[in-house]
Image 1 (cartoon, helix red, strand yellow):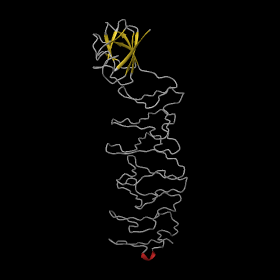
Image 2 (cartoon, rainbow, N blue to C red; image 1 turned 90 degrees about the horizontal axis):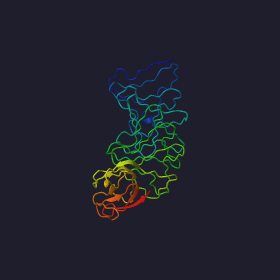
Image 3 (cartoon, helix red, strand yellow; image 1 turned 120 degrees about the vertical axis):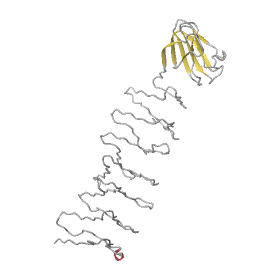
Image 4 (spheres, helix red, strand yellow; image 1 turned 180 degrees about the horizontal axis):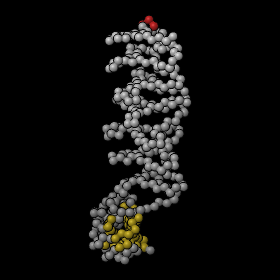
Length: 344
């Protein structure tokens, strides 16, 4: 027989206590009777009031849906405007949220169409661990077919975030599938330092070393300085930059046509002693000038620089069909450059 029992009906203000101090070690069960109907048990607070469970100091467990087999366990309402907050304990130890012991089940955190799922979004100092168990796991982030924007770390200038990715004894793979994509690292406008393979152990760093595709690797822009501290070895060849058709500056001033590449072909020298100018000297810089024009040309260093100890600001003549190779031996001064000529 089904009965309906009203508790506290038409009472404006009351406290309803179930399970007093004398039943501290006992179980308190609501809705344990066998009911033939498919109705629901509903506990509803008045509008504007709060419903509190276990608000006093207790060491017991509060279990919601622990015996649920096939139904849905819902906390919160899809169109609600208030927040749903689930806290872990304040003591040291593990607080398990969504501790799913059935391996075939899936736990889903789903925000609304324009909503946000925030994990650790407040000013707390605790750690957020994902996939921290000792078992083998697959952690998938942004693997759906839709366009994703994944941000790791603080994007503001005031956030001194450190993002560390460890692979243990395994590997760290970026863009390993066949899809065409762009991987951007350090593309922000601020000054940045990139450290790759800077650990104390012996490092092997591979960049596009697959022998099949014709890879193109660019390091640094036109104004960049790239430094190699050890030995730089090529199994094929080093390709230098080339200017193929320069015109010497008419009149032969020291600020002649700039030699902006490693190898510079001067194809037009309208008048003998028209000029070209070497770049700002960096010790070890190697510049080649090849005069393919009909007249001799003059080569200058920057203001104050000299060639072959010929004196500051002095011209260095290169006859027609002659190649001059100039190497910077100082950053400035009358002996900044050493040049040698080679005729056909």
